[in-house]
Image (cartoon, rainbow, N blue to C red; front, top):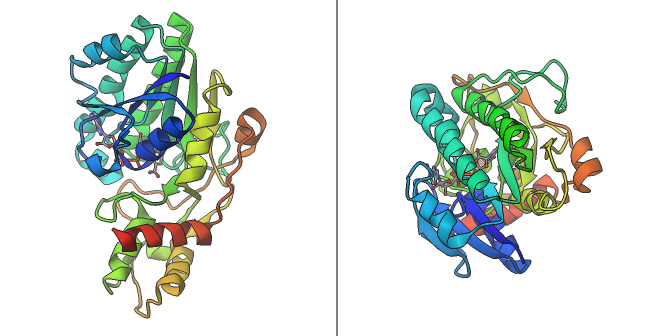
Length: 306
Ligand SMILES: NC(=O)c1ccc[n+]([C@@H]2O[C@H](COP(=O)([O-])OP(=O)(O)OC[C@H]3O[C@@H](n4cnc5c(N)ncnc54)[C@H](O)[C@@H]3O)[C@@H](O)[C@H]2O)c1
């Protein structure tokens, strides 16, 4: 049994990770300020500290709970907000995360696992799917802050021998992703289409992304508890699906007869990004298992229920 600290554990991906860790018999501590996370997502077997990662009181959590592993998922992850408020973005995604690193070193954490982004770090790569060797060229402050923290993580490994794995998540979707937020196109489309509202498809519905179901991402996180040390790994599906394709599948699943509106991309958004899964296969023994239609059906069922 490992004591794992999950920052952002009341959020969409973090809460599924907490559930999986608890099911695997680990002791789980959650730190979340509930800025986008929800108490209803919290696993009752986890210890919960409502706290901002920038708060000095975080050192008390490390002292009391003595985590052996840190999964760092808490983040400002709204691309458009990062364009409008880059300082706010950096305060959480860089400065807050460095505070966490300092505590991880002080308390001799066995491993630090970071949820980075494959979708916002590469910019518009020259070839697709983008591999980890592709030079990162973020097009938004969110991608830049995630990349900056990757550098800190490697630095802390070199300076302080802190073991780490960087997981670059693709476009993750599934139950508990908010249909009201700015991120999470699948849930946003479902939310609108269930109410009979025609959604707006930006980039005229053509942007390609790799959509990976949250359960698959959580499996990748758990595998990196014991594998992938000092590595940067895309959890990619290698397949780009267009927003038009999502809309078509969802129209079919929901029985939606309306048309979508189509508009140009917004600031900070990339036209095409999907990433490799080769290193994840080799280093973690990971590959996505849930196909898009099945994953969307699960997501739709959840949103209908809630
Ligand atoms: N959803 C995706 O497609 C995707 C893709 C790439 C990377 N990621 C990364 O995965 C992680 C989780 O994303 P998610 O989709 O679950 O988002 P989310 O917004 O549901 O989860 C983030 C959680 O962090 C908490 N949080 C935010 N700022 C905090 C702070 N300063 N202190 C403490 N808690 C704070 C929020 O309340 C929330 O519960 C993020 O780091 C994100 O950058 C997500």
